[in-house]
Length: 277
Length: 348
Image (cartoon, one colour):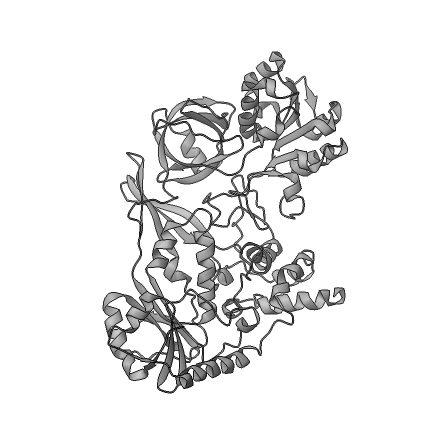
């Protein structure tokens, strides 16, 4: 028997270096790896973050892969025990992480193609990793269209960043809110209402989408209406990923384990699964 | 195949020796019709004719509550916790060995679960050919009447006073010979073992699937929308008893407990069950299987299709424990699969 004490359940320490409030409930956290190495994740992957004494929970990585930087970002909505404890942390505090885990957006497939990024609600958080990865290698891609849908203007996150992107001309940005207030001058309606407003080359466009469970089937239907094939549509699905190792059973979608088979799936691969979308 | 013939009077001596090296568990009667594997002690009467141990053997390799890591909140350091008592499970029926083999595949595959592996490596399995069949069991019809591996020794009772013991591992043989040399089985002993197996198989076949068990995944593929799921699940109490007693259910939750100073603590896993209401619930209270029907169907699909698609065996070994444990009398894989078969019979 091996005497080396290895266990996939043991997190490694990272240090919180920055905290930025994005909305009433959502905060961005920047961590630095104590091991001095880059996280070496791919866009769409997640980490399991531990706050000892409270618990462990999975979070999508929001920053793009970085060759040299040893920091990475997540953005989190304060909603449960772990996320509340996380919001209470001050820079300098250490937490544990395991991962990166799971599948990722197939960036290489997108090379030379147009990419439509559909971000519903907090979906922008993981998609940001993909988007900024592409922007760092902007010349390798065709058009990048970003659709952002939020329930109401108060819940918009990364507002300045998205405005900058729109100004830069590198990304075609379309935004909508479901429930406008008096300050809102833009599109109104669920995110699906944005799709008819854009011309896409269906044979040449890949789609990456993340949003609330209800969103997928409607956005996928709109994409299909535009003639985009199932194999060009990629979704990231949320489930209760506890162990991150394909063992504990909580994140199953039929027979798939979201934590190792996903969270990013090609729509073709999950179309037949009743529990997926 | 190495086989030895062991006489009943040789057993106490062997048990005595083994129990000094291992925690030795043997089948015993707890009360009428109610059996379990219990720690061996001198003069304990072994229930050779037990039909099923009410608690499955998974607790020996994946205890209901098992520490995974210890942590120090102040330094943010964590270390693995491994506990792997040396143990002998004597008298396990082949369907339970089959279930254990299945756990081996699922826990060792992908990212190997070190906690499980260490416990499993420290566990000696001494299988025993059943003499009685539980009225709820149907293991003979789901491919679980025999196992080809996973045991260190396989005992078959061939006369009121003797056993034929097949050696499955060197570790097993060494244990068997701890009290001195044994006779190799004669052709007659081997014939006796063959007959004993045939006898029990005939009894076990009384409860059977009405089709070849290998058809189950194809059958289920057609039955997602069957009215059966609702018919049965509407009585489900979502208590998770079927999960708890199932020898192949291994889903777990991960939790932690701090010491009273809140500085150090232990993160542990605890058995969980897909029939429990909150099993697939995520932050923000979205539940991916909100209805009993969703959960009930998921469990049968897992047993009959998902596990099969992964490892080529049914996730149900036909032990019948869930049948006996279910208060609402709706947990019964044999009945469920057979009724689905009837429902779709016209399609064949």
